[in-house]
Image (cartoon, rainbow, N blue to C red; front, side, top):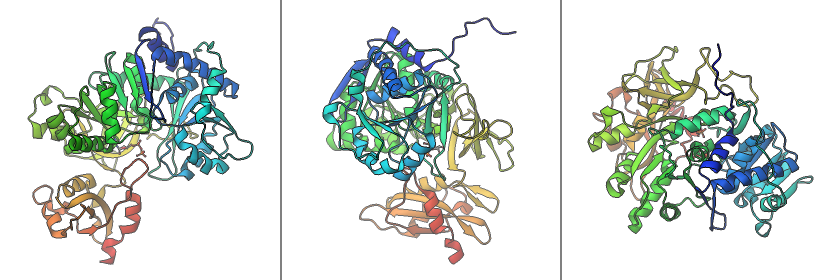
Length: 543
Ligand code: ADP
């Protein structure tokens, strides 16, 4: 028997109409390309998104068409976020930090109808224009600030504001199946070509609910939230939806993400919660320490995307009274999967233990589930020690990549392998110990490269460290430590190896240390271990 409740589909447009109707005067603030401040309200976002639908229709966009964006976090980007799915089209955010060849590949693979581009990316568009199939480029600016762009024959260029001025806002949001595709985002391709993750209205709604919960981002009508995490990658952690859903203010920082700009906007816009990757927070910390500036309204800084450095947690808590919170996710998870908020047992932990605990990536969000398995797929215990492949399942987790058969990204029981290796403790807190392709398999046992890297960077002469699996004639693989010295220092191999004493089992010790001037990174700032592996894989064979 079916329930007798009203059959309202979970539409992204109804997140926005809720914000406009019930939180109409709540602010959306943007730093523009010209470094001015643009202010309007959720009521304006809704009206302008309807107007943008008329623009899209005029440009020939229809249901199911892909609408690409190459843009920073700003109000015009937000309007595309809502207008495209609201009219049954798909908002396809593209990461401008990728290699131009990958960007061209993604644009062609998604078969974009229109491309919306921030002024900063005009040179990028000129560079890839001969290689891309899209015909209409809309620069997200007014006619006075149109940049020089050379396009390929047959392509047209338009100004966003000009198109908007000429359009009506008489559109009415339609209702349709909540499983309709709403947005597309490609993973940045640390392994092979980028793959598209295709979200739905339903998955976006459920994810927005879950990230708003008190033990996750705790979004409320009084919150003023600044996502540094880009809208062009991983949906800005769902914040453009969560703030509208809960009626909070949304502050969009544009392209200036250095420490000084961040401190200024956080204070000027009275931000209470801000979210981004550790690099941004390290930049902010450096700026605050150097200038003596304070943060006046920020209560919480959420860090994710890569492991949280302990220094961040300690420094912001002890020097600025700001709580650093840690979450984990990935493009395939919409993106948030776990968040580290205390249970009763963790409340009031003394500082070194509190920091240690906050290094864990956290508890699963309600609605989805996780498990860790060994090489044979057998579930491992939640003892905080055993580590294995982390698998997840639930309604905001991808089942297949764009263009592939439904379900093709899942194992036979319907679980998605994250590619991360993790432990889970008895309280359900997950901690990543590795990427599965980076874990070192020595004599049938696994060694965590991340654990070894964290210990290496605690050495006073070491600025950055990577540990990779090098092929070994006896043990299959053995850890090799690659380090970059701090400026003006030299690294003594024996003294680096000595700091492992008592911290890990003897057989975990790297067999050798190589000193390098720098380490390679991906477009999203993560260590590019594939290139290190191809360079140093045979290190122990040569020895
Ligand atoms: P890509 O790295 O290809 O751009 P994502 O942005 O989706 O893809 O990144 C997802 C990966 O980032 C996760 O699988 C995990 O390895 C890593 N990651 C995300 N958050 C954290 C975190 N808090 N701690 C450690 N690793 C993290």
